Every structure is written in C-alpha cells, then in structure tokens.
Length: 517
Image 1: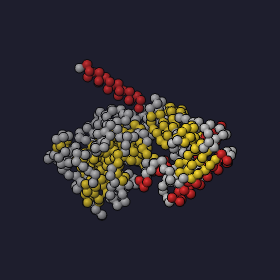
Image 2 (image 1 turned 90 degrees about the vertical axis):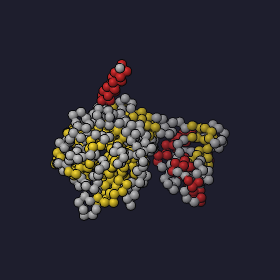
Image 3 (image 1 turned 30 degrees about the vertical axis):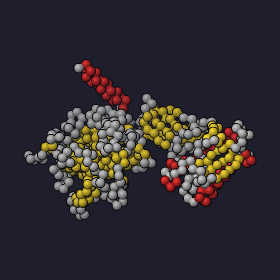
Image 4 (image 1 turned 120 degrees about the vertical axis):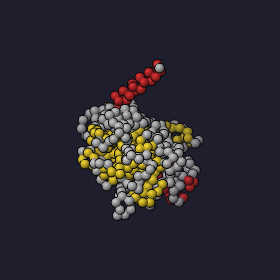
C-alpha cells in the first residue's frame, strides 16, 4: 500500500512539473465544447465539400450492434454543416457505401476531393484497422466506387488516421508496423502521379517515440509547412498531447508541445484547422463524455529568430553548420543545418530566454544567448560568428598533411565556393607561420563523368586552389598542384556509390612534400 501511495505522489509531482515547465509555449488557444457531442465517442476527421466529417460510436436505432471490445456501437462516419463560430448542424450519415457493419474511422481526401482514403476495422478484431482507397463516381452525389485495400496492409498491423497533404503527393498515417519505434508510429507514403503509393517510410526518431504517436495532420500557411500530431511521448502534460513540428527541406524540426491552453492531463487528439485561426480537436478531458469534439480559436503570437552563421575573422558565410536551440533549462528545442547561404531560423516564444549552440568541422563550438524580449509578432535578427580551430599538421596514410575541412566546388565546376575561403585562409596561416613548408595540392573527383573529364576537372580545381593561395601572398614555388581525377577514391564503390560516398571522394588534400616543420 505504501508503494502505491509513493507512485501516486510521484505521478502527481511529475504532472505538476510538466505543467509548470510546459506552460503556454507561446500558443494562445480558446477551446469550446461543441453541441453535437453525445455520451459516446465523437472524433473529428476533416472536411468534405465544406462539411465537417466526424466519426461517432453513437447508437442508431434499437438494433444497433455493440462492439464487445469498446462496449459502444460500431463507429460510423457522419457529416455536418458548419454554421459559424463553432456551431454545427445535425449529424447525417456520410455514406451508405463506406459505412459498414464494421467500425469506420478517420478519412482524408485528395485535394480535388475525388479520392478518399479511409480506415476500417477487421471483422475479427474491431481494434485493428486496414487502410482503403476509393474514388468518387463522376457526376454522382457521394457514390464511392473502386474500393481498394492498399498494398502495404498486413496481418496483425493496424493502419489508422490517414491524411493527404495539400499537394496530394503524400499520404501520412499511423501504424504499429514491425519497424515502429513505439506502439504506433507515424509514416508517410508518396502518392505517385499514376495514383500508386510507395512503400511507407517511418518519420523517424525526431517525431516518433517509444510511446504511441498518432493523428498526423499537415497544415500549410503561405510558405511554411507544419506537421501536427498527437503523442504520448515527448514532453507532455499527460496522455496524448498535441504537438507541432515545422517541416523545411524535407526535415522535421523538433516537435513543440502546443501548450496548456489546449492540452490537459487527459487525451487530446485529432487536431485540424478550419482556417488560420480556428479548427477542431477531440479530447476525453474532464467534463466530457468519452471523446468529444472541441472547437478552438487561436491568437498565437508568432516570433522567430533568424540570421547567418559567419566566420569571425573573414565574415564568410558558413553552410553546413549544426545549429541547436535550447531553452533556459538547456533542454534541446530544435536543431537544423545552416543552408547554402549559411542561414538558420527558429520559432521562439515571447519573453523566453534561449541558448543557441553551433558545431562545424574546423571551428570551435559556439554558444550564444538570446532573450525574446517582445510580446508581439516579430522576427529577431542575430548573426552568429564562430572562430576557426588552428589547423592540425598530422600524418594521414603515410603522408604529412595540413588537415582542414574539405574544399567545396559547384557540381562539375572548378570555381571555389565562398564557404571554402575560410579553410584556405587556414592553409595560408600555416604557410606564413612555417615559410619552409612546400605543399602539394592534390585534387580528386568522384566517378561521375568520363575519366578524361574528371582528370581535367581535378587539374582545374587544383589550379584554382593554387591561384587563391598565390593571390593571398604565398609564393608559387612553394606549391605543386596536381589533379588525380577519379583514380584514387577514398571509397572504392565503383558504380554503387551513394551521394555520401561521392562527396567523400570529392576532395582536395594538402600534403607537405619537404621536411616536417
């Protein structure tokens, strides 16, 4: 008995700690219980031709079948008119074709609303769902035809919560597939132009946790795309919480809890927008009946911090830098790689303090402090200048080299990219400090293209490197440029080279060809 009491106290203290540390997280939601909820489960799922589509287990008629696993009627799809300010019309059965004697669940539509993706339970197990697709018969009023079971369904796997993005080229869903990190993970499958679907891809550990992650929803606001989802993992107030993750360059940013103005210690699921400021979600929070549908309005204060990663001495831009945003407790909030322009950008919450750290090969780790000191929508600008590590002279493959970050060129070109000027300046520093050093500049390419072209390209790249060093004061008689083409790969992958392999093989090596300094 004493052990149970201690566990209860621990859970209560953990919950209070989460509530105090999460707070509003910069989100300001107002939530309202809709007037269509019953004593049974109602869960919103999206819109079709202006009508709200929901899933409900309310009983229809005296002969309604009861699901022994849930003790509620088998779920059906309903449609409702939206009357403004969260008011809803009377629920009507959505489709006599799609509603069956099994349980129906979440649905999603292609952008033209002529294709529907939907989940339906097994006859043998009402808690296991399979994913289907159907098309709308031309000039019909809701006559769905060509019902197809999607190819990646499998035995003992439940596939749920489908959602099609606004471009109609990706299908997201949750499933307990064998490669899931936790119970249910979120997956994505490409929708090809001919309508076929690629094999599903797990969204990975940035989104999925050792617990259930479900109900994916993609929202596009001008040039920004975000994934909203429900998770029992990450840092939450309890049960399922609602999270968002910004998507940029096919990368999912660290998920952010939508805060305590919408999340509670109960379950919040199935979030989706009606427009930029309003939408719906479902919750089994205190005061509701099983799962109920709630309407929300939001007045979120949008703030971002952005800037460029620069070399402290030369002010050259530094792409490929790992940039991490941490909160005042040094907990990681988000992480990204600076783009080709050396740029980074993070969402931040008003009146909060942050630490930004940087990591890049050849540079000292950087630490920067920042406070979002305004209480209105704004963008803070902060360039981050980082210092180089002194170059190392070391033996590599029986050669004495000046070891620095690689030199970068555009594809099939020999002009040195500005981002590599910092690296070359490090070579200049070593050569000025040790005037006795003579240096071989050995340039190598990947194996794309002919042998002759790659040899020519490597010679031109070695020559470009030579010219930069001479232009910055290094005597020509100390430098010996040579191109090797594709003849000396670090990874001999032949015709099976990955992008990473080819990047490794594209390199310039600085070899000391006289006595050690």
